[in-house]
Image (cartoon, rainbow, N blue to C red; front, top):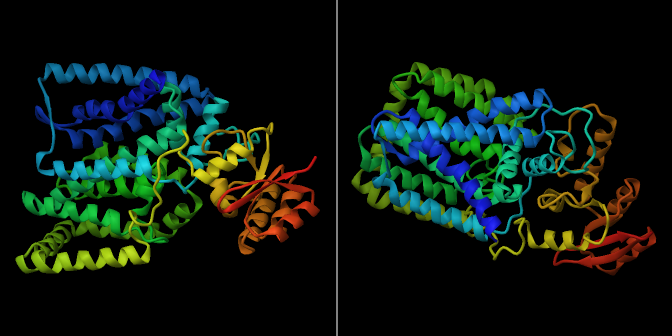
Length: 482
């Protein structure tokens, strides 16, 4: 228990207190606002980490060696920043006008980090977990456990989580699912606060009002398939969340300034590119397709910055008028809230809650399936994507025929092409029992997770050499008979 508390405190220092101390070095004046210091400090702390990660990867250093190097860097930077604070007699201050915004963000994030039953999954935490287990970067597949001949181009965000885990001793999954929601939410709310303050100038009342609107949209504009705030609550540790929620509003804030902040803007762009390389194939393809439009928008923004800011101020000014503020916006918010609840866009009502029942914060049914595999030495599993996405969040005991991202593969490797064909076939056929059997036997599976389908399904599996091992509310698990 004491060890877990110590691990949490070390991780909290690395993700929260250290960035605040570091961020004060990049702020003028003696009074340093905590939110802005934290946002800048997180960007700089990641900026300190990435060059070390690149060097460690180039010289094939271990995760342990990289963690030691980063720990030394954090120690030196912490002492230097504290010395500057003491010598300059600087003080940290909280943003009093926005204290209730931060309190609301904290309470909502606490709800999701503590009680929301996770059903999402991606390869970021699995890659980080594999790096911790192997003590090497990008050496093994995060799903199958097979050693990789070479790695695809990708960023170092999973390595950052692995290094935090090595330094603190906190499990990678807990770093991502327990700590990162607060990081993303606090960075995001600060970035939007700065952006609103830049747009509205000294009109603090309107920026205060606008920030509540942002929080409202975070909760009620989370429709499935609509890229946006849903990722903040479903997978806040992912590059998609960090870029969309944190870096994008901050980049707009920097570009909207009268004075070009060159060094900090270049550092932020460097981080965004590296973290973007970690993103899934869907986001990369969308970014590639929208890149010309984005460049055009940035070019127009650079040319007509004053007029665009005037239009934004004018629009917000209209919203702040008495009739609109007192009647129009409340009616509109109520209508959006009702529509969001009924159409599945409200992240609060469209989530399942319960007390955490395992240290990995994976879905309860997935944990039941994982427990069924415990007596087996190194089982190989074929499962629907929602199971495959989480089954290796906790540990690396179970390996998979292919990961949940197999259908996104676009390379030339024959084995991976075959896996993509299998994944596409299973998806089209809704993971039908016969299809699972055919592909499972072809890949030599030890375990197959199938949707419940009655006695007829069990007879099919028995005919092909599988016996029923157990079941959950939605799935039946079959074991290969020796």
